Amino acid sequence: MRRWIALVAAVLVAPAQAATAPAAAQAAPVNPVKALERQLRPGHGIQITETDRAYLARDIVTVRRTDILLFDRSGIAAVDVVRRATSTLPPGRDGRRVHVERTIAVGGKNYRSGSSLTGGLPVGKTWIRDSRRAGKWDALFGDQFLNVLEPVTLGFMLRTSTHRLPDRGGVQYRGTITWAQLLKVSRSFREQRSFTPPGKAARSKIRWRLWLDAAGLPARLVTEDTFGGLVDNTVNDIRYTGWGSRVVVTAPPAGRVIDERDIDYTPEPPAPLSIVVEGAKTDGPADTGARLSSADTGARLSPGPDAGRGEVIPDEGDGGAPAPRPASTVGPETRR
Image (cartoon, rainbow, N blue to C red):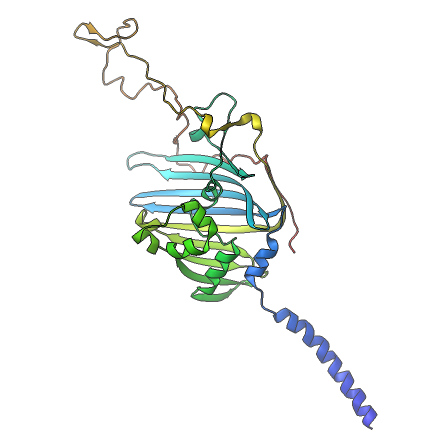
């Protein structure tokens, strides 16, 4: 009888133990900071898509960005950013003003390209190179400052969050952070700002909401900030995709690059005018009989170094497309 009871007990206990082990493993909480650190591997990275809107009086500036990020063990090693900013025109003028700029930061160098930057460069040069340490961070965080891809910053945000809510298989966090707090915890913010925000700016608060996926990795971030009172408000919506993907970021072709120190920013002197005033002529080229009148003002300007700056287009959707990315690639996702 005792043997039979022992046998029955063993049969009943074994399935219970087998069922309990996976349940316990499944219930183990995910550490988001550790999950992020595991993703910081050389040759791997992610893609970011971002939409930002800044409100100032009656003006609205909309920025759409597509970023490719390459990681190493320390964090973000290289970036390829396409930024398209669209601003409304003053009342009474139809249309929008559009600026498109691309920045590649790799190997400690920053390369920038766009019509507003390269209009006056020598023929064949389409990229400007500089070595500013903040260049990479300006490209990535010029429109919003929170870098949730820094483990220290992410950990601080989660510890100080005011809400933690289940959300579609993941978790949503909410909270606020001041510029002064961000300066203490975020290396990218310190290197970008290069100064301590004064008084009111230091107390400026960034309101944020962060969504983590089931693996504990950032999936979406929404922030609001007044930039120390410089604008009425900004709303930034950032999506993080492709965790574990193979990524390559390379510098532009050397033949198309000019160093910022080699650019001559001296404006060309304006061509002298020959103006007839009561029969007298100024010291200019041969008198062509040109007379200064209201019909001539602001009507005939030759394209100069700023040609292409502030292109005005009809208000019909976004129009155009970001510059192609021949220098950077995102490969298949290999999440671990």
